[in-house]
Image (cartoon, rainbow, N blue to C red; front, side, top):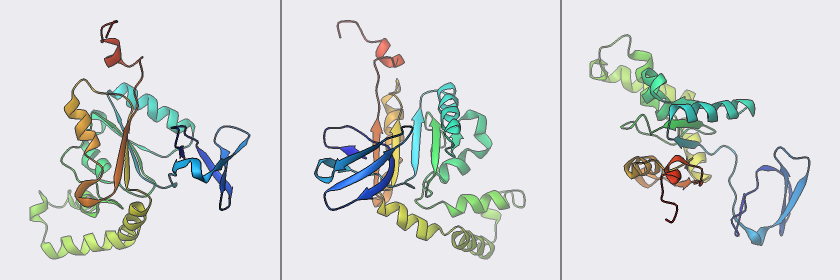
Length: 213
């Protein structure tokens, strides 16, 4: 939950009325009651999040921190190159948390609710040499089966209602092009989405700036 003054609160909603919302704050044994008029944005649980990092080491450190908090996630970097397309394709699923290094997996569509085609090809790639070799009828039947089984349309509609894919940049890359590629993964083809980058004077890029700059 974000206030109009920029302050953020993370926790579980334990009560609300016409004027206030009460949160049980995460990692703290206390509650906070906030006036609705001072709240600028509320993020509902389940919104898919894609976190961009600048190195494999930082991705793995972040993954370790999430694991300690019991947050299920996927890590996308050069070590998972065989599953790269599969991981990034499902980054738009309800409740998904994905960590990506230098926005690996470019060229793969992130579909809100899930990408049935990528899951279908993962099942068929040992049977056929390429997607073009799969008989159209078998392909379409498998796509429809996966969409029904995984409730992708229903989940996609729910993800849209709660704001779409949320991009978090943990720091700026030396190449602005990579930042733009990361930011561009949300809000595709008319879908809702949002991106936010967090900067620190301790970032490597900041350390390279002149002292009087």
